[in-house]
Image (cartoon, rainbow, N blue to C red; front, side, top):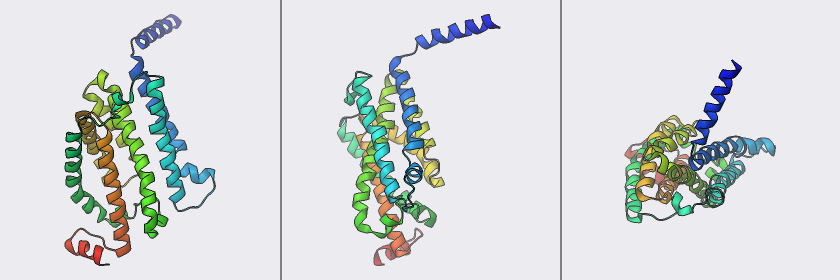
Length: 256
């Protein structure tokens, strides 16, 4: 039994030695950063730690700031210091900006009708803005709130469609798109059902866009625009109490 264990252990060490440092480091660092994000960079941790009963607003700002640091700043440090590579190799560049801008515009136009339909559900609309009633009741706060959201979205897109996708591209080729989609989808757990389901296809589409444009920037543009649109339309629906997807709901939205 002991001898068999030694043989298995030697086989394991031999296999480990064949692993590439870059891909192994990316997998482990993504797992560790995601772990810290899940347990220490979320609104629940903020409210529990600071014993506050704020209606999501300050805990949301903490969430954006903490996750922004974890998913953007830390990889920006790791890439040149540990991996000895350039940020541009991980999608931090304009890339094929013509394709990037055209595809971003196309995706936004295609998604608008679906976002309008999704927001017609009152329970979905009341989920946004995620900053709670303080943002919903104070329109002047919305711009300030969306800037924090933008920082979070920049970090989120860089982490999945930059650091992970381009970091694994050389080793796994096109499969890297599917690899980055899986944790992206899983981390939508707890969101409205339709949004969680849609994240499967969003992860793949954004992955292809980043791959083709050689940049994650255009994924960020699409994702941030979607969030802003959902937040604004949800606030308008709340203010006017106009739910549904028909022409009457659209007219009531702006008349009220």
